Amino acid sequence: MDITRTGQEETVDGVRIVFQLTPGTEAPAEMNFLFPDQRALCLAENATHNMHNILTLRGAVVRDSRIWARYLDEAIEFFDGQYDVAFASHHWPTWGHDNVVQFLGQQRDLYAYMHDQTLRMLNSGLTGPEIAEEMQLPPAVENSWHARGYYGSLSHNVKAIYQRYLGWFNGNVATLWEHPPVELAKRYVDLAGGAEAALAKARTYIDDGDLRFAATLLNHVIFADPSNADAKQTLAGVYDTLGHGSENGTWRNFYLNSAMELRHGENAIALDTTNPEMAMALTTGMLLDSIAVRIDGPRAWDEDLTIDLVLTDENTRHRLTLHNGALTHRETPTPKTPAGLTLTLTKPHLLGILADKGLDDVQVDGDPSLLARLFSYVTEPDKAFSIVTPDDGAPQPLILQTRPPARVPGLRQGGRNGKPYSSSGAITQVGGGELALERLCRGVVAVFEDSELVSALMKVCEVVGCHNLERQLVNGRPAPSDDELPHPGGEVDIEVVRDEHDRAADGR
Image 1: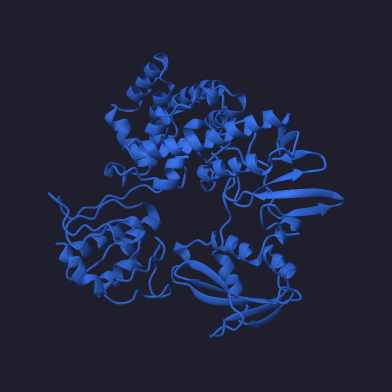
Image 2: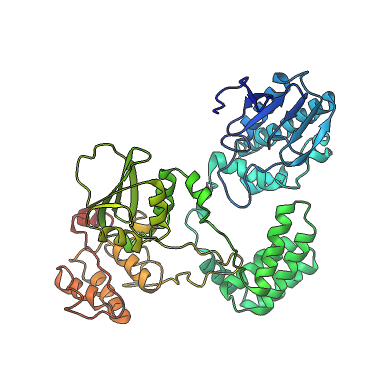
């Protein structure tokens, strides 16, 4: 059964239902519906006994509070006089027609007020956090139990509305290209006079009741040195206090879970994503998307393969292309070019392949090794990554300079991976380790005539042991094969982009 319009009436197992479509409110596809014979109105998740989330703290697409308010207003008029009780999917009922109208009106005003006042203030130059500090609800709404921030909060909802319209950047260029958290933390701790001095100052802020800034300062101490047990225990205590004092349930859970991580480390979550009924409910496109977002892009930069999936039970053909580290797919009944591998199968067979059950009963045409090559780049998500402590795998910066410059000639922010590159002058900060070296070399427009730059890169190669790249820089030719030359630092194949010479030279 497809519900496609407001006012549509259907009878399900003898029960009449009248629908109101409300897309883009609490969910992309959402609806209210009336049981006219029972005079009962279901408001789904659109009107509940608390302020809902415009953006969930767990992460989601920002919802549209403007359209949310408009659909609640429409519901007041559309269902008027046809119910004696209203209820929500997760909440208790509201009895009496007039009480429901008052309830819906206050919920409508709640979302409309947050939306409109946020836009009014952002148009006056305030940022999301500033608006969240300034925003105050009308007394009639603020004093209504069903509008309290038990789930959503006024603070994070206002920031979400700002984000929906203006994104993460507040316009202040000091925040445009900041260091990542670990490197930022090290510098702040250094400014504070070291970890002990920063910890002492944090305890002073705690004693003064400023737990918010104490948390910020202690967080820097821990990200600068995750082995600092005193800072962890102190911050855990701050989070305990903030959590126990939170009216908002999700804020409380985040604070207390963060305190637990600081004391005991991250907690692995048992999450089963292999349920066959759930998997069968996903479209083929969704299944392929789930592979694409797990491709290790840097490892697959130089890969180029195509695989066709012919699904006989769906009468569809999907072309998968792995190129430049990106796995894309499209439905194509008659492809213009042949694929390296074609698999003729059913959707259950596809699920079996994704579950590593092999190619039994699957018709294989072409090179079956392409499937293994594709899956060799598929990673598994980390179900227990740290949140309030730095990730162990966070790259450390590598600072190289060919000479101390008064300015950075040739610096251009269009480098690969967001790193700057320069054809003369200084090489600025990039990530560390083997991947960092690869990023450095791929992100720098290396012009052979620039001997200082080549010499700097060769020194990196010598230190890391990447003789492959070093030989390529010396000879200006493709790197030798694995059999020709050892490279204990791992092969890093760099293409020197000669045709960038003129553009790089313009910045000198």
